[in-house]
Structures are given as structure tokens and as C-alpha cells.
Image (cartoon, rainbow, N blue to C red; front, top):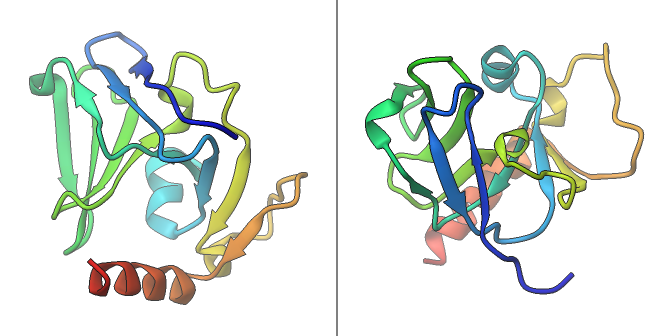
Length: 143
């Protein structure tokens, strides 16, 4: 698909603006129960390890587990970032980008927690929670 270029985005009210370069030009959907409560549905995200936020003081942070935290706009409440506490991964809310049209949905994770009340129309790679955790453990062990 070619090299990813930096993409900009922000929250609904504009208090948080950011730029990041996706590792791949696609979005993932997380169906875990925490993401669904946090985003009112599956959390659609893009991995952007080089995320730069213009005014970090506008962000609020919630430690949602022992390994990860979630960030949102402190003014309008927009769901923005999920990140590993050790900084090894940052997932940006795909629809927070100014132009998310270049980001097709390709991967669904925690499909074993997905409720039966919705389905995506396109074919995707699907991973259970156990498969996701094993992949994280493997990537941590490998560096």
C-alpha cells in the first residue's frame, strides 16, 4: 500500500490536535467490553507510534488496566487514544483523524467478546482475546 504519511486530527471541540504516522494504512476494531463501553461500540483505531499532541494539558487520562490507559479530551470528552503504559503502542481513534477515508477496516480483535447485535460487512482478520494477548506477549519477548 505504500509508505504511510503523517495524518492530522483532533477532538470534536478542537482543544486537542495531533499528528501521527500510521504504521499501516488500515484501522482495527476492538470488541473488548472496556472499548465498547468507552466508545459506545467497537473502538476503531490506528497504530501511530510517533503520535505528537499539540497541547497535552487538554487531555485526560484513565488507567483502564494494569498495562494500558485511555486518553480523551478534557473539554468535550472525545475518545482519542489507547496506549500501553510502557509506551510500546499507541492506538489513535480512527475517526478522530481529519480524513479517515484512507483507512479501511482490516482487523477485528477480541471477537470472542463481540456481542451478537452487530457485524461488519467486509471480510476482516479476526482474533480472540487470547490470540491478541499471545501476540502482545510475543512482541514484548522479541523486543
